[in-house]
Image (cartoon, rainbow, N blue to C red; front, side, top):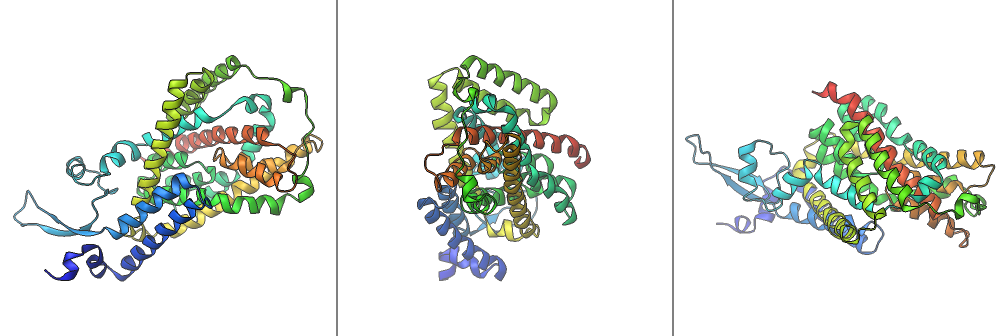
Length: 415
């Protein structure tokens, strides 16, 4: 046994193609950087810290595994792999064998690859979302959210032009929803072959939103408009009763499930979580928020990091295209949201703050906080968070609606 066979993580670097070996080293370094940026709160720590650890570990911990041929005469073959997960395995026998060896494979197969983890995240999002602003300002909130879908709509033809089939183009376009569970759900249904790279690109960019969305707001909204105070109106002081909120939840859930059955799991998860909040059920609230939301987010981040295996990503020629499309989709979504803010500003006879438009890109509550921070930088006395939360919650709803439309229209052509 030579030294490289003893320390297989290093030894396997010399048994792979140079591109993959260099890619592994780059991903290890990138994983360390993501952990540090999450720790510094430059990026979203809930996703970035587990993702960075997973990314570094999976690319460092490659080994040679012996595969025994049970039905043939061969003694066995050597296969370069990791013992974290195998996202490309789909046969029943293979999965049963792998789930006894790869320690995260059961979590991936039973929650991640079937979209369950997305629904758990949506339940948690529902339980922390206040829909009162939606009911107070339904027209302005929904109008901004609709304009914020500009990225999701325009990225589809761009993806088609770049060579994607309709299923892959729609999955890539949903990166513009800035809603990770939505991207995960859509890619699973429309193009499983792109599921891994699309999901990774989406979550990487969603964390980067912390950095470049404030720049878009500052570029599009001058200081004097960001400093604008919204004059209070009658509905601003009125309270929406819990009864009205829970009625809205159940009716909206039933209506949207009726219209878009393919997205019913997402609608059910979000509105059920919100109804539990409105019904004041503290035990369920703690379960959904402290266990489901944070538990699912932790495993989501960890699995995303583990999926950043250089063999998986660098072997897919579509990754570079997805990086470009993701940037286009989220950039156009932000621009569309701010345009929506300006339109509401005009409709309300200048009694509105256009910076609220960025909150229409769902990514709740991140974009709402970005809007408030952009305003507070120029005028600390201006509070626009309630308006921003209304737009952000509507962004979740419009994202799910658009996802339902894409899946309903395109799914028959992918089967």
